[in-house]
Image (cartoon, rainbow, N blue to C red; front, side, top):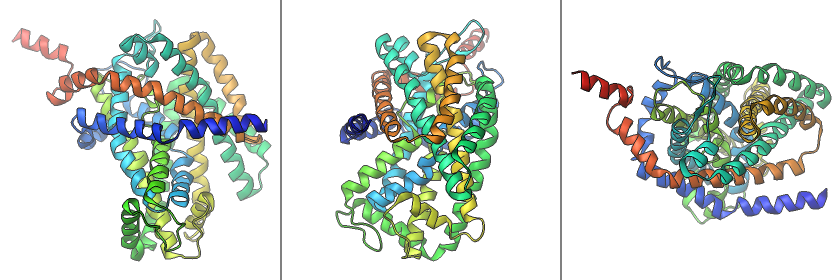
Length: 459
C-alpha cells in the first residue's frame, strides 16, 4: 500500500506541476481575450442567476444549477486550502489565488456555454450534458469523451466523497469527541436522503444550504476583518508586494519567493473554483435556459462567488490575523485557520466548524450528480441508481478510513479530467465566439434568434 501511495503521489506531483498550471491559467487568459472579457458582465450574470427563465427547457432552475455547482466547489479548499497556500507560498499566494478566480470566470463561462450547446434530451425529458458531450458531438472524439467520463466517475469518490466525509468526521471528533463511526452513519443517512431523489432533490437542498452556509461564513470573515481593521492596509500591502517580490515576506511568515507564491496561489485557486476541471458544466447542462449564453453567464458567477469573494475574504482574514497576532504560526494551514477564527469571542470555533462541515457535506451532494452523470454516459441510466448506492456506502468508508492513497488518486483523476476539458474549450473556441456574438454581443440575450427571425418575417 505504501508503494501504491508513493506511485500516485509522484503521479500527482507530475500532473499538477508547472505545465498543468500554465495550461489552466493560459486557457483562462486566452478565453478572456477571445470572448472580449465576459467578466465585465458579472452584474448581468448575477441578475440572471436569480431570475426564472419561463421560456426555457431543463430539469432545474438556473439558480438550482448554480447552487449545485457552488455546493460542489465551495468546500474545505476555500478555508483550509487558502490557509495552506499562505503557509506554503506566503501572503502573496492570496493575490495569485484571486487573479486565478478573476480570469477563471471566462473559462467557467465557456464551460457553461458548451454544456448547453451540446446537451442532449432523453426520451423522458431529462437533459444531459458536460465535457463528454462537447468532446463527442462538437469534436467527434468519442474515445476522449469516454476517458473524461471514466476519470469523473472515479474522481467523484475522491474529491467529492471520501475526502469530504473524512474531513467532517475528523472535525466532529476533534471538536466534540464524536466517534467517526457515528458521524459516518449520520452523514451516510443524510446523503442518501438527498441524492436518491435525483438532481432536483440535490438542487433543492443545495439551493437552501449554499446561501445559508456562505452567508454565515462571510459574516464571520467580515467580523474578523472589522476587529483587524487597523491591520487591513498592512495586510493588503504585504499580499501585493510579496506576490511580485523575489524576497521573503518576513513579518512572521515563512521564507517564500515569487515562484512559490504564484505556484501555490494558482494551484489552490484552481482547486477551489474548479474552473477548467470540467465538473460544473455537467450540472449546468440541466439548467432551464433558453440559450447557451444565459447559462454561461450564470455559470461564471460560480467562480466569482467561490474565489473572487470567499477565497479573497479568507485570505485577508488569515494575513491580517497573522500581522495582528504575531504569536499565530503560519506554518500549518489547518492550525492557521483555527487560530484566526478563534479570535471571534465564543462563536469563532463553532462558526469555523459549522462552515467546514456544511461546505464538505454540500460538496458530497454536488459531486454525486457529477459522478452519476458520468456513469450514465458510460453505461446508461440503469447504472445511475447503482452508482448512487455505491457512492453512499463510500461516504461511510471515507469517514473511518485512512485516505492517504485516496487523496493522491483523486488529485490524479482531477488532472486527467482537466486535460480533455481544456482541449475542448480551446478547439471549440470558434463555437464559443460564434454563440457569444449571436446572443451577447448582439444584445439578444433575452431572446432566441429563432424568435427574432419569426418576428422579423411577420413584420
